[in-house]
Image (cartoon, rainbow, N blue to C red; front, side):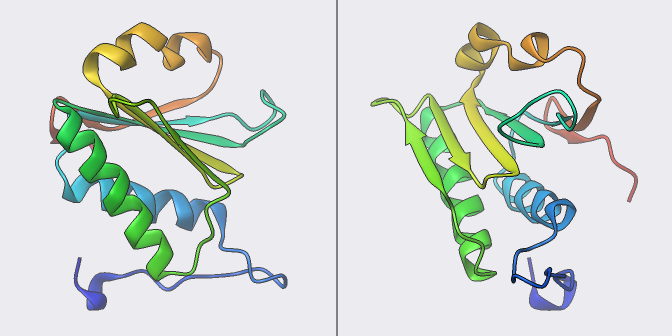
Length: 138
C-alpha cells in the first residue's frame, strides 16, 4: 500500500488508535497477501474481553504466516502495540491480540474446525473477502 493511500490515523487523548481504523489497517494488510476469506465479527455487548474479531483464512501454512507478518508489520509501522501473539507449532492458527481487536488467522481446515463464526453466531458479521474476492464496493 503506498503512503498516499494510507488513511490518516486518529488517536485518543491517551494515544490509542481508533478501533475502526485498526480494523481497516489490519484488513487492508491481510488483503495484500490474498486470503481466501476475511470476516469481521462485531462483539461489542456480547463479549467481555474484546470488541471485534477479524477472522482470516488462507490456503496454506506459508500464507497464514505471511498474512500474520504483514498485519504485524503494518500495525507496527503505525506504532500500534500488540498485546499478545499466539500460534501453534505448525502455524495453522495464529492469534494477534490488539486488545479491542483480536485477529485470528487460520488455514481453512482449522477455521472450519474451530468455527468461531458459529460460536459467535449472535454477533453482527461482515464478510470483507469471500473465496478470494472482495465483497466490498470499490
